[in-house]
Length: 316
Ligand code: BGC
Image 1 (spheres, rainbow, N blue to C red):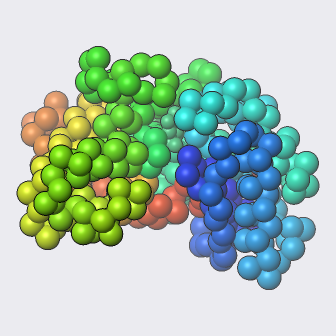
Image 2 (cartoon, protein in one colour; image 1 turned 60 degrees about the vertical axis):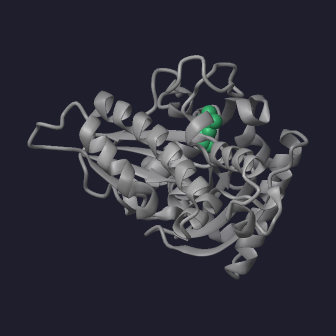
């Protein structure tokens, strides 16, 4: 059986055809339009159709379309209630995609989908409890507790990107200040990298970004840090300390068996997570317990969301 998965992001829409074991057969991606929900739905449908063509299938060959979208989602009504980064309010995304692709549609928060993906086929496999976070345009979170996705009373649970790590800190699109995602998202890292580049024209950060602020990526700081650039090393350290602060606090709340870190920035691998692990090991309140949370990188990498989205019908 084949399933379509769509991962709606703040920068890109990614679509993939996935088999029942969570293997990706084909994929496509397009930039996310910033011109409203109808255009976003068109882009999603176009990427989905191309992914299906690339797998040499037709839409009739896919069981369903699963969507992971940022924001608070009503999975039963198929509605994105609120997504601050793209100013979505009460967008009936499932209906809009059904109109375009004419397949059954399942909708879930993107980080919840990633958590389900990692639980089914990645770092959380076989665990009794898992919390997953994704470090991308925003910071998302999902928890699978006792085999069930925990979504809160109103499906808005685990909005960890909007939990405050710096009181009165940087402004967030949600209206608060100091939210985790204003320090730990790829967007935040890119913003800080550009700030440091402007202050340090001698930094290797310029070289790794082709001398162009517009070409800075989440990985730029890691690349320059590895080449010994002290500005980049300080940036990476600052990023890791905020990330560790948020993770340690979340571990103190959930104490899950597995805490999984995914999303684009997690592509830096152990270079990112190694130092974070050391800080968390010191700060976790359960540091004297025999049983400790395992802090792991997402095994499915940045594909956790799309695989989890595709397999949504298997969790309903
Ligand atoms: C949104 C979440 C989403 C996360 C990752 C945050 O800004 O509030 O709903 O899961 O970004 O996309």
